[in-house]
Image (cartoon, rainbow, N blue to C red):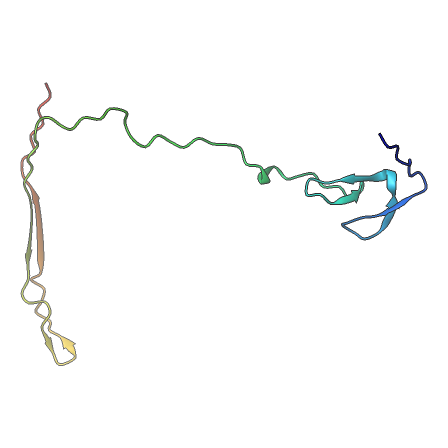
Length: 111
């Protein structure tokens, strides 16, 4: 194997500041930059997020409901022609607009 020089008098240029520092005091960062130990920044933890498994979305062996549920739902809209107008002004007697909603009798049977 080849032997390398110790570099005790050598200088190296920092990739961050562009200043010359002793070769033996240079370190390599996580992004490949060679910087002086005073300029070194470790990798931020948010760059390597932890694995979080996803939540379950469905059941393993689902079955449909065996008893049919019947519920009556109705909506009535009673209006006295709310879109009439007198020129550019809407009419004033459209106060009769009503909306009724009702739900029938739901039946729940537990067996």
